[in-house]
Length: 254
Image: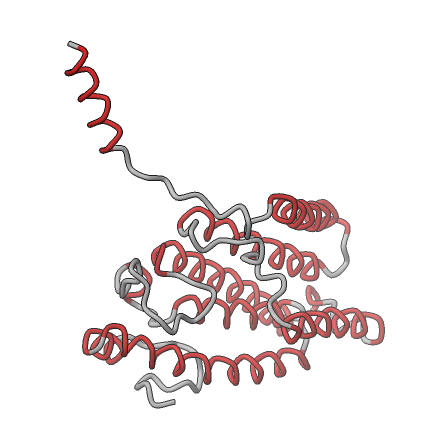
């Protein structure tokens, strides 16, 4: 009886799946909780003050920012815990990213002060269309990016991989059936949506120029490595699925 019981317990242990938890050394609890707390405050204050704001799109912009950065960490932690760390919020996403959103907020506030009628969108059909378009692009962009991270799972990374890892697979299902780089598509249109939502003409043009320049370099760089990793399989996939970012070639010869 003892030998059978011991065997059964060992067999059960061997069949139990190994759960991989985030590395505590790179996923510092005080940084994660502090960042989450800050994003929660931003979200709560923006939601709470929304009914009292004259230019409500500004609150929606702050809400979108808070949700974007929270979801970057949350989805990575849930579906790709080996790669999550305290920087997965993407708040420290380079000086260019910080400057871009700082200028966007500055433009919105200055134009609201100097040209208050421009930010009074509810009295202009044209501005209502722009705000609605911006909100739509923002929501669609966030949804596609989050779905991309969820679908790719362990194959998703915030950093372009130059060496193939054991768990790196070519993902062609789900949202990847329709978008070759859904996370890039999502980020591009999310960012453009934020500026249209704010009725920011200057930063709308600037965002389009900077983002196009960034992705026109990053996508070909990443695809060269994907061809190395997956060969003809990726080449065939690339030929059948578009990127859907304006003025970036779909044939891989950017």
